[in-house]
Length: 399
Image (cartoon, rainbow, N blue to C red; front, side):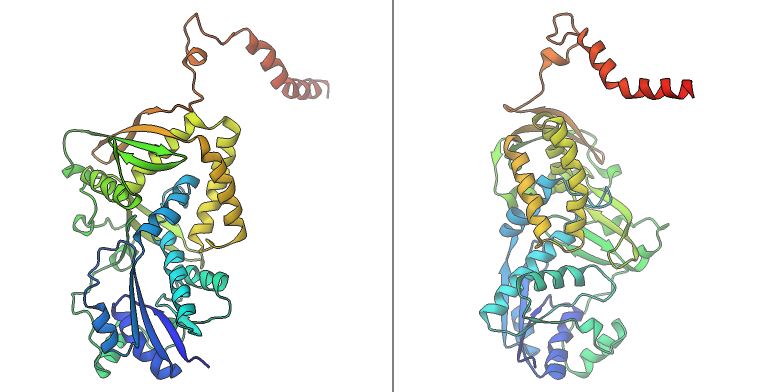
């Protein structure tokens, strides 16, 4: 029997009616919880709205610092990119939101948690795996998998019948999700993968055609794999990401249009804006090329693919993820230095990198005569490296 539930609450159509639905169907007390992860949405009025529609208490919390420091930066250091393009903006926020929801549930001695994710998407998995990892004793309620409401129109009718105020905005022809790291767009008119997104949809970035005609250079400093400064100015993680979002957005950086594979087996078309993240990934990867040895860099690149899958699939709080973090943190001990990038008309190009820990030596790399590298040594190396091929060829000739 459920006596008290903590609901992840946004004040949108779905969660607006869920308070009433939960009280009617479970006869329980409902605590509403809203997390600010940088979505730039108006949080003012949420408390009054939640209380007026039946919530016994409301939590509205700013999680942006923790989001940047403990979730975005570890993912950046890992180099995690899902299916080679998606920088995991929505995926990485869900474990943090669910983690805090569990903490509130324990504080309030609730016996259940609830979320507004649908039964077709990835978010239900991300929320619920976090719940199971951090509080397996809590009951999980997913109204979308239980109620009889078939869609938006039935939800609106339910709200009207029960006197629940809902957002009176014109329905967008797509859905969007925004946070400190990115904005995602999907559904509606975007479900046709042949249809080009309308320019007015984008909020964080100019189109490359409307970007400045003059390139802009930006320099990013790193310490142990984490970005610390932009153009010589030390910034907090949140301010640093916000600053790069503005700079990158001005030049049309970070737009991605992909068809991705959801965890539940559905292919989904998603359009993303991640200007600051795109700059940071390019800079971090460039710095690793001069500070990591070949074998470590190549092995880390293999693990980045798995790390991205773990984030996408909601497996943040797993033993494997913790083990990968330990390895990645070890690799980042020498990843300190600075990277200079050139931004122009949607392009983000690395044009310089330097580090006191650099493994790059010009006296070895140069083609000039005074090079420290003795080219005669290459003959013996090639003979040994190619010996298996030679033996195989001789065998084929005999047979």
